[in-house]
Image (cartoon, rainbow, N blue to C red; front, side, top):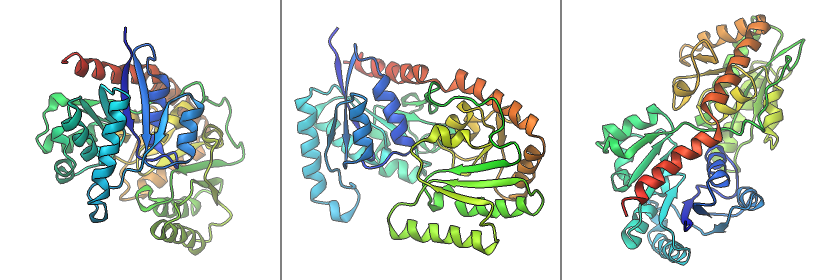
Length: 366
């Protein structure tokens, strides 16, 4: 059987977020007897290094944002280079891990006449679905039922859409067998410090919990990008901690490269923005509290592996944190159930097979 070259477009090469982790899981575990992956990253850095360490062929090729005015000229030269690269490697299918690269996919599809697959990882509006040419894609992978909804609302053919939840390396993220801190209860939020991740709301929740339960400690795991918007937001988060005099109970860890250990050190994960960290926390045997956004509702089994609770009013999340902190045995039971669910629902092998099934379906059409 001839190996089928697959070209992947990554959103980033200089850092590793949830989307990059998921792409790495896919290309590192795809059936190499059947497929030959090549990842294209728009910049160099830690993700490129990670892929190469895991023997995934990777190239760096600048791909300027297609819809930005400043990219009107450079985007076409970048697309031409991408076409040349795809031809050199005889790519028979192109898969973008980020839907913002869909216009590049459409350009490749027109010139090479190969099937294209787009991963919908973001919460889109129907207008964005139209802007980013989802109707031109041969297949769309949505990471949740919620992310599928705007695609349907924009009249994308439902037969083109598959919902495949994020996965996690169950051998790396291992469950603990005892409380992380017997005398305390540690609640964490994980992710880049930015408005979408809602760390300011997390600090507000911490202040309300601290007023009623003195044993709870909070960790903000992650760092801000070196941009004005992100630096300003981080400063506002830290100012909020100072305003509520929470410096002794809210700890900023900065960016962690040892996420399995970082999650082991928690008793509970709170996520206000969804993401693959939900699967990682469950695999680590931690209960998760999330809001009904993105893939959260699809990943958390309500009352069994954690809780899906609206952010407004936040008192409901506050009450649940306090209840778990005051009943650590119940918290651990939920964490154990979360691990079992992760083993059943978030394994890499099943995830990769579902993606490969899509490839085979597209390629069998000739």
